[in-house]
Every structure is written in C-alpha cells, then in structure tokens.
Image 1 (tube, helix red, strand yellow):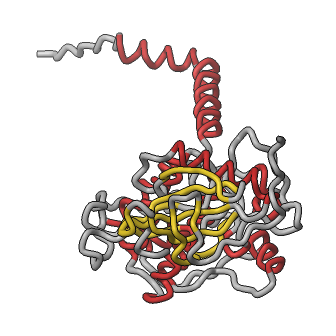
Image 2 (tube, rainbow, N blue to C red):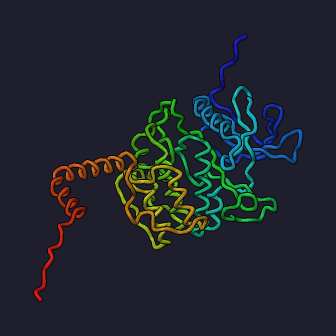
Image 3 (cartoon, rainbow, N blue to C red):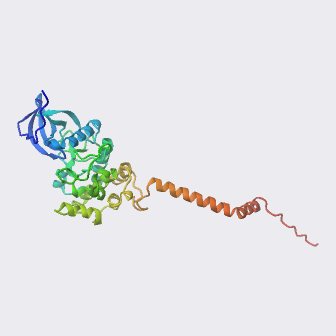
Length: 352
C-alpha cells in the first residue's frame, strides 16, 4: 500500500505524544520551518528536550536543510545540540537539547543592554557557532541565539569561560544557505527570507547570493542593540526597513571607541569594506572583550583591502621600482663605483 501524502497542516497540542517517545509540555515558539516544543522524555520525565516539528509540508526542504546543519555540527559548543530525528503523524521532527536560559532576546528584554565586554563575548560565541556550522545562517537575530545556564542556574556571562558562565548557542538554521541549494529571494508565499530588522543590504536585494559577510552585518546590528539597547534602523514597515539598510547610514551614540570601530566596520553597506572573514571579526572582538591585548582601532587605518587587491598593489609597486631602477641604472652604477673606489687624495707638499 503506498505511503499516505503529508497533510497540509499539522497541529501539535500540549500533552500530545510525539513518536511514542516525548510528551509535549509547552510550545516555545515558531522557527523558520516549524514550531518548537518543550517535551519530556517518556522514559525519563526529568529529562527535557526541545523538539521542532514540521507543520507545513511546503517547508520540508528548509526543514531538511536545518536538520543537516545540526547533524554536522553536533559536537559544537556553540550550535544547539542535535539529539535525534523521527516522524510524528508522517511529519518529520528533530529533537535538540533544551536551552534552559531562554534566548538573547529574553535577556535583552530584562537588561535592555549589556556591558561592552560582555556584548563582545556574546558575539564571539556566535561567531564560533557560525564557523562550526560551516554555513551562512541568513537569519541571525537575538531570538535565534539561545542560552544555556551553568550548573547552579544563576551565573551570568564569564568572559572566556563556557564551563561556569552562560553559553550562547546558535539555533534555527531553517534559512541557512547550503552552497548546493538554489533559492530565490522570496519564499513561495511571498514572505521575505530573513528578518528585515537584521538583514544586510545585499540580502535585502538577493538572498541566494549572500556570503558570511551578510551574517557579519547582521551580527553588527545585534552588537549595536546589545550595547545601546536599540537597533540602528526602526520601522513598523518591513519594506521601509529594507530601504534603510540599503540607503541610510546608521547613527552611532557615544560608546567605547573600540566597539564603535568594530560595529561601524560590520555595518558597511559594501560587503567588500566589512570584515572579510569571521576570524577577522573575532580577533578584534577578543580585544574588546579583554581576551587579547588592546591594539589600535580596527578602523584607524581604514577597513582594509581585500587580499587579492593587496597583492596587486604589492606587484605594481615592485614593477614601478624595477622600471625606475632600470631608467636610472647609469647614475646608480656611477654612484656605487664612486663609493666603492674613491679618487686618491692629492698630496700637497709643504715648502720648507
């Protein structure tokens, strides 16, 4: 008998049993391609997991993409942990570790802003998660950065220490870009792929061609929000927000000069003028967090040139030097000869 097709829509309610293994306790929220529920393991009710269940059949490719990213990054310290996968009423689900600390959004709602060093440390943990996931996230925002508490459940961030302090883990890879997948900039329902408040200018125009520098821009928005308590661009109209990202320059309040320089470079409209790699950004953030000795402002000598252009300038400089040396060769050789073989000194005889 052929398998039954997926229903158009799945409803999951509190108390439901998923795959005969998990009892639904509470709905936690909705991700890029399904809803997330806090569940008890039936064999051990004390153990909690977070389960994302695909609810719309049309989101299956995105769900499978996220599941693949989680599987590959299952040993990461800064990507939400993968547990298992299965089906609930023919709809796939993925079980993940339960993040007891809530999200960065929850934390910012309580604290409004973070000290500069803490904000830098949070961003460093996010960068490490992105690097370990080996993909372009395309939907970075505080809601997708989850926190796990230390053993006593009361500790805050301890800069440089993930054993005793709060740990940030990247979640919700439903929009993550895998390089063998071609996507258009709009979903089939016409919704923008991403969250307009945090989208890079290039993602506002063409989602499928973005690189890790788009995530760097989004993280710059999050850094701005962590330090100031607000985002640089605000509007209730998502299309106005997209226009702001593409055309308007953010205004920066007074803040730590080194953090200001980092954020300004993250938010360059032209991707070529931003940090070119996640590692480059982490290096400067490590200075802001106090994990490395402070150095000159990262923007004091400009945003830096792309590696190919730097080598081109070196090559051009070398060619110019060789051309000048050839044109002035006779004069240079005469000077060298005069220095190497000085003329004999004339002796003046004194008359007695």
